[in-house]
Image (cartoon, rainbow, N blue to C red; front, top):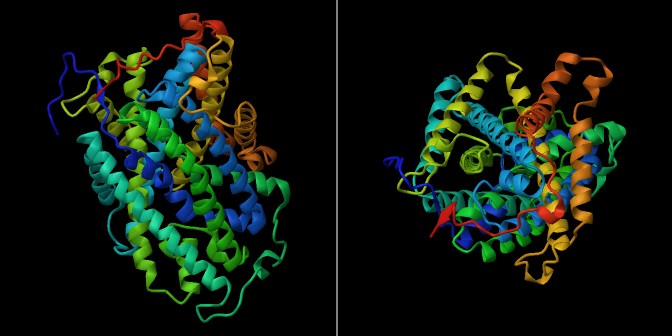
Length: 486
């Protein structure tokens, strides 16, 4: 794995190429949420409700990504979101955002590993989930333990597999809708079945926002990669611009095709751990391609592991960044001869395995982890929206020329405001049913990440007597060399 250099080697290396970052931007967030959970969204809110939810969350993610792009091209640092909160808002805010994002990563990896182990039961129904979990942990750790170029190359090919799969799915889906593959003409009849297109009213619609958000989580990791990009001023804007088309083609059209082909009343859409419950498999079977279930199983498995590897990268870089900013121990800023923050990577690995072990403690632990992952993700997105809003306002306040920005978010300030408003809506209303029914144990599980964030923020603030930085005093210097080297 390479010796850890504990002296002066405290920099990551800029080895990610534009093609790496572009492909990761296109396919990096495609995983469990889209392949396995999209059917559940349709079953709960109907095809129209699910489509609208994904459109709104997709718009929010696009707005967030334009903000990330603006900040990341101006200040390309590894583990960027904690640094942005620290410099543009309040050191206490950066501290809370950083640790929340790290916690989100740890929980998300545990969810991905649990899901991957469950998927293996399609082929090996009686094998140990713990055994598969250990194997997958070793795999994603290995992908992250060598050079960042090795990581980028592996993620490039993983993402390419996902992109090709979804394109084939959309082609076959359209042919099925029009009856070209030999079946009957479906058209739009499933958009008028039962209570369709909208089922369950506004509360059901609000309830699937978290599902939709979970599907998109990971998109923001492109900003974290800026610190290890060979040419961040070129690769980050290109990747951000591709996000719009990814959202349109890979999320919105996918939900539309599934909703048109499979009635929302179908019990199969309710979801589960078996690959046969994936809406992708259901659509292929409807097209007369039942044999493809095993192939989809392999593709979904690689997608989940790719997602876990990407999140481990982001979590380790966040811990590395916090080590630099004083929000975590200085030992986390140490790197090995490959430029990998090895101490941070090992701590992430150990913490993730500890969280993963919870899934064997209670049968409900998996659902708890999914809920916690979704909420911490939205808190992180809210932090990004606030940081970007403050960055641009400080930039203007200090009379800097906007034309000098290498990438400028086109929808500011509306984009940041809409993104923040939607994040807060989901955070507050994500488990309204438990609140209305006074199920306080479920409320505690669903909202636990929120008081943790508040405690992190207030404890750092009171201990260090920090304050919200006046716009005229925001540090806009572009000193990034302390973290990265060519």
